[in-house]
Image 1: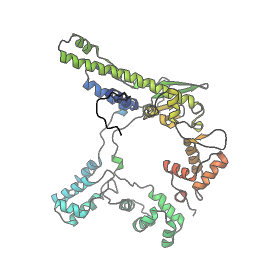
Image 2: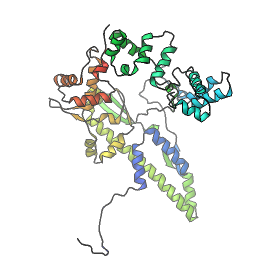
Image 3: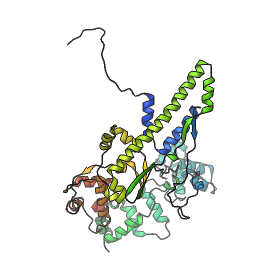
Image 4: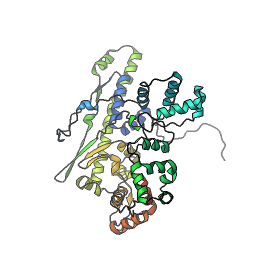
Length: 436
C-alpha cells in the first residue's frame, strides 16, 4: 500500500446541486395550484417580480348550459364549523353546575377528529380532580348530542349508540353488534346464525343495515380547504385527429417590474445595487425555469399522445403498456424528470379527466403477440367482479383462469390479490351474499 504523503492533482467530475437547480426541479413537480402559490410568495420577497393574475376564462369549446354553469362566487371558501364548536353550541343551551360543565367541555376537547374518545375515565378524573361518576355522566351527556355516536370509545359503542337512537330499532342488529361484534366483523356468520337460530340471510341484512350507519360521526365536520383540479392539458379529437393545448392561461404571468428595474439602473450605492442585481437574476431565473417547465411538460405530453393514441381516440379500454423510461429515452432526459413532470398534473380528454401518471403502467404478458397493461388488467378484473354471481363470487384463482382463457392475459394469483387490494375489493369470502 502506498502511504506516501504530499500534494497531488486529481481531476474528477461532480454534479453540484445548486440552489437554482434544486428550485428548477421543484417547479417542475409543482401542480398548477402549488406553482401559483409559489409565485405569489416570490412577489412578497422580490420587488422586481411582477405577477399578473391568472386568466380564468372558460375554454371556448366548453358548452355551458343552465344545468352545468357554476357561479364563480360558489368557489369562495366559507368557514366550516368544527366538531368542537358544534358540540359547545349545544352545550350552551343546557343549564348545569360549573363542575359538570367544565368536565364536559374538557372531554369535548379530548375527542379526536372522528368524534371518538380514547382517554381513560380515570385519567380524566385525575386531571380535573373529580370522581369517576362525574366523568361518566359527562360522557353520557356528550353521547346524547348531535351527531349521534360522538363520544364513543370504540367503533362498537359508536354503532350501538346509533342503533339505539334510530326511530325504527332493529333488535337483531343491536344484539349482534352488542354481543357478537368481533365475529360479525370477521364474517364468521355461520357461528352467529347457529347461536342465534337465524338464517345467514338475516345476518346479511343486518350487515347491509349497519353499512348505512356512520362509523366516523365527526367526519362531516372535516371539510377543510377545498382543492380543485385544474387540467394542465386539454386533448381534443376531431375526425380522428388529436390536438393538444396546454392550459397555461390558469397560471399567473411573470415579468420584470420595469419601474423597479429602471430605479435599479440609476442606483449608485454598491450594496443596494448588488442586492437589486441579485433580485434581477432571481426574477430572470424564474422566468427561464417557467419556460423550461412548460417545454418539458409539452414534450412529455406529446410523447404520451404518440404512445397512447388509441386511448385518446377509442377510450380507456385501449390503454397500452408504457413505462417512464421509454418516454425519457426518446426525449433524452432522466426518468426522474418524467416522474416529476407527471406528478400532480391532469389531462382533460374526451373520456374525462385523468392524471398524467395514469398513462403509465407495467407490461403484462399475454398469449397473443401484443401485451397489455396492468391498468387494463385491473379494469377487466373490476368489470368481472361487478357482474359476478354474488352467491358464488369469483376466487382469485378463478379470475386468473378467466383472464387467461377469455382474454389471453397471463398473471399470477398473487398479482390478482395485489390488484384487489389496490382497488379496495374484498376477498371472495367477504363478497359472498346469501339467499333467503
